Amino acid sequence: MRAAGAVLAFLKENGVKHLFGIPAGSVNAFFDELYDMPEIEPIVTKHEGAASYMAAAYAKYTGQLSVAIGCSGPGATNLVTGAANAMREHLPVLFITGAVPVNTMGLNASQELDVAPVFRPVTKYSVLVTEAKDLLREVARACQIAISGVPGPVHIAIPIDVQHADIGNPILPPLLPRKPMIPLLTTIERAAKALWKRQKGCIFVGQGVRGSVDSLIELAELLAWPIVTTPQAKGYIPENHPLYVGVFGFAGHEAASALIAEDDGGALLIVGSSLGETATNNYNANLTKGRYTVQLDFDETVFNRKYSIDLPVLGDIHLSLLMLIEELRALGASSQRGKVDVASMRHRPLQDAAEDFNTRNVLLNIQECLPSDMRYTVDIGEFMSYVIHYMKVLDWDSYNINVHFGAMGTGIASAIGSKLAEPDRPVACITGDGCFFMHGMEILTAKELGLPILFIVINNARLGMVYHGHSLQFKRTHPSFEQEAVSIAGMAAAMGIPSYRINGMDDIRSELIEPLTSLKGPAILEVALKDNSTPPMGDRVKFLSSFGK
Image 1 (cartoon, one colour):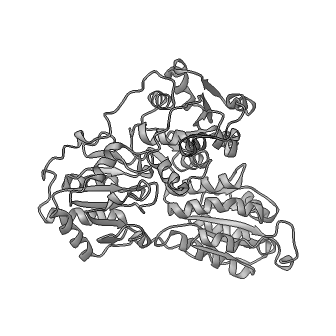
Image 2 (image 1 turned 60 degrees about the horizontal axis):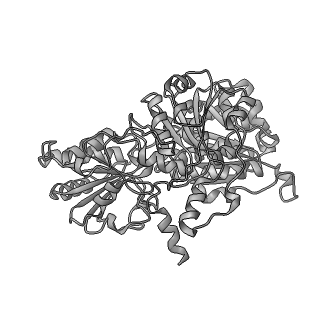
Image 3 (image 1 turned 120 degrees about the vertical axis):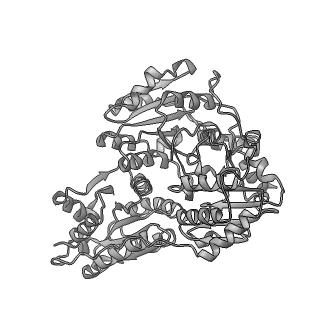
């Protein structure tokens, strides 16, 4: 058996069903082995960067190890951004890259680059394997590291000759399931008593609550405390829940900011947020000021980074929440503790769209034409702030927003990874022309795979967030931020992909848009709109402006 075949056999035995990437000379042994291994489907993308985002989204929505592959040199460096993204998202992705033959290393071989050190800062483990006898052991070790503790990406660089080497019939090492991180009972008891004795408080929810929403809501109802979320956590708390106030941070709501600004001497329970820049509205000091803070997380490095935390609780978030609920009930908590007048502090009633042709109204009207259980993968651009601020949360886990790392084009590839992970969940990507020109050809990948994804492209013929940011910060914009308008619907026609173009509010009709979601492949909904309204970016511009003074 070739070493490459043994690696794929190990991955197959451990539930890997897709290999995201692009075939090339330095990884051809892997793709050749796939002829005899139909259990693993190669997802051949148009760019390795997109492959890495797909693998990350697949890992996120399956909760399992995912794999991305690229050739030596440029293929490998194209994967690095996705590895950094997976590291920030705590996603277990194995990155496999080719390498030149061992005996040509250092001789300026074609596409030679020592990428193990390049991947090291953005992965949990990165290694170059130069002997075939070590390869299977190193791959198994890397995969175990990827899924253990705080999950994250890992990287293995494999020279061409090592891939092709015959290693006999090795025993495939087992991949052990991740051990749960159980919080200390004494810490949970302290946290429960500290929270219970404070009559006032607020629950600050980050994306780490994913998979634990029901428990989070039960805890909030026991405490009768209002809930605010970070932009990344939009879509986890039902919008109509009586305790939900709104989004705090980038593109957040005034009501959430007003609640955080209150200096009431109460408590702040932080659940699954690393308290980064976009989550905290540029490290707003009011977040913890005058409050007793309890932070739940499974990553101990997030404690006391920027904010002093009175009581860090280390452990898997769903376990910490379950144990906190049990301790609070033992202290006499019940959902009848008291009622909070959240209605008076909510960011808004659920608004309907108006008729002006602008980004807000277009997105709300389109949402009304789509299934209520639609999941939206949201790219990076001015439209993202409108999604965060205005779009509705109508179903569970309904938004994939990656504002804190912010790689343009992630939304396009994430839609494909999400659809492969959960085929029955309808998926729409909201992207812009700038992102489309980076990774839009992956829509052709969706066509080749027969994936019914709706790609909503806000086409304003400019880099919208950059344009508005410069207008607000510097009172001028460079002409290069704008470009000649290109018909994305016309590009879709050239690819044989159905499309529909919106030029005004009268074009947004259910009978024309809804059928685009039930095809046997992708469709493009192009919105030709140049919106000169100031996007609801919150204090982002103030933060950037502070550096020019």
